[in-house]
Amino acid sequence: MQILFGGTFDPVHNGHVAMMDALSAAFPHALVHVIPNRLPPHRQSVADSGHRLAMLDLLLSGYERITVDRIEMERDGPSYTVDTLKAFRAEYGPDEPLVLSMGADAARGLARWHQPERIVELAHVCILDRDGQTAETPDVLASMRPVDSIDALAGSAFGCLCRLQTPAVPTSSTEVRGLIAEGIETLPVPQEIHDYISNHNLYRTVND
Ligand code: ATP
Image (tube, rainbow, N blue to C red; front, side, top):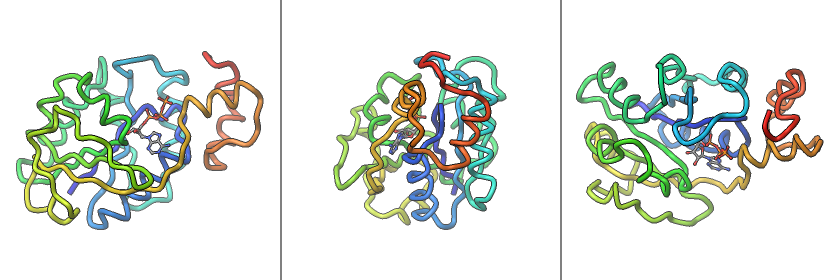
């Protein structure tokens, strides 16, 4: 089973780390692929791809079952999740369970993604619900079969919707960039990410 967790990670922060840990714990027999996008379709990233990738590499080098996947960085053009899922399907074959995981906020914006209806036939979806709250199922996922145990996903390759309760870590990359631009030293990011940001003078102004 392959778990996909994509994002801009601009920069990676404690909320992302909590989600990666939750996925790794919930899917003990799977590999979690953290997939930084090369060129966010909906917006520009602030730090360039190289820095975003380097921070993830630094953070995840000690993890055995979480890997940084360069697939979107190495593909030309916008990073569409549907293209990434097709590539995973081609690599792992028709029977491999693929699980696209995303935070509840990302799930809410799913209808604006490129060809969101194709996701249903390419992967399972796991919505990361925070702090006991259950995000509404986006219309575009209405045809998916809800399952209430993670194990149920192992029985098929795609088409199921599960939810994972995760701890609330209320921060965002936008907040981290704002704190740095204000000169605030205490940031909701792991220490090695803090050091990397300082050493490379990243995010000193909100738009750099
Ligand atoms: P930005 O503030 O720049 O929009 P972000 O913090 O939302 O960025 P992304 O890289 O866009 O981070 O998100 C990647 C994934 O991580 C998405 O699925 C998103 O829902 C999830 N995520 C982001 N922040 C948190 C958080 N604090 N807790 C749980 N999940 C999060």
